[in-house]
Image 1: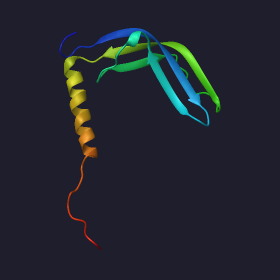
Image 2: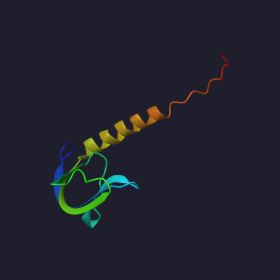
Image 3: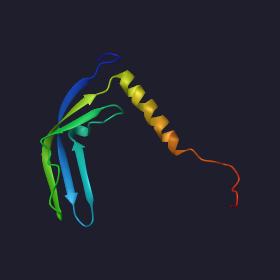
Length: 98
């Protein structure tokens, strides 16, 4: 893997989708403790996209992870930091009465 390059890894995973009155969520858990880092891409193959209301579905699938190269990882971290700082814009000016 070079400065710009990326590598691809295929791992088994568990997909859980729930649509009940208590919860609406979809989770993917990668096997073998595989860590996802900034800039990585995950594609789950043949995963269901919905379940009927009131049900929960858990299935085993395969995921392809495309690892980001060092430059792409650094760029992703920088852009994420800049986008996050937009949320921190706070005004410390005195409050005026209208």
